[in-house]
Image (cartoon, rainbow, N blue to C red; front, side, top):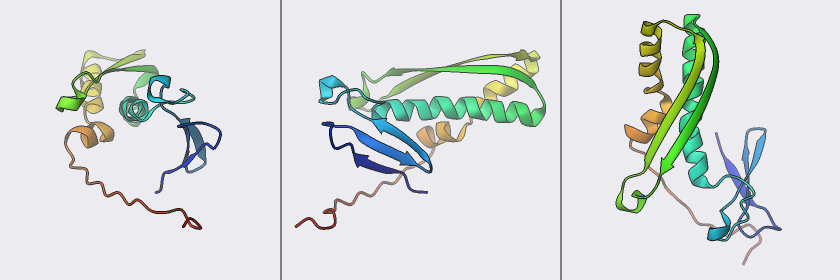
Length: 138
C-alpha cells in the first residue's frame, strides 16, 4: 500500500494526504509556518495509536459476542522530552456496555496489544528516504 502526499498549491505548508479513496489535509501549526488547516504529523501519529486501540477493542468484543455499546478515546501527548528521546502518550478509552470484571480485564490486555502499540514499542522500523527531482524539472 502507498500513502501519497502532495503540496496544496495555495498554502505555505499544507499537504493533501491520500490513502486509498480517503483524502485529508495535513498542515503545520501557525507557529511553524502553517495555517493549521489539518492535523500535523504528530497528531496523525498519536491518533493512529488511539484509533488502533479503539478498533482492536471493538473487534475483539464483537468476536467474543460481548455487549460493548460505545468507545470514546482520548490521547494526551507529552512531547516535552521528545528531543532527548522520550515521547509520552497517554490513552484513555471510555467504554459503555454490560461487561463483567473478567471481561474488563481481558479488554485491558487486548488494547495493550493493538498492532500500532506494538509498532511503536516493540518493532524496529527501518526507513529509507529518496530525494528526487519532479519529472520535467531541470
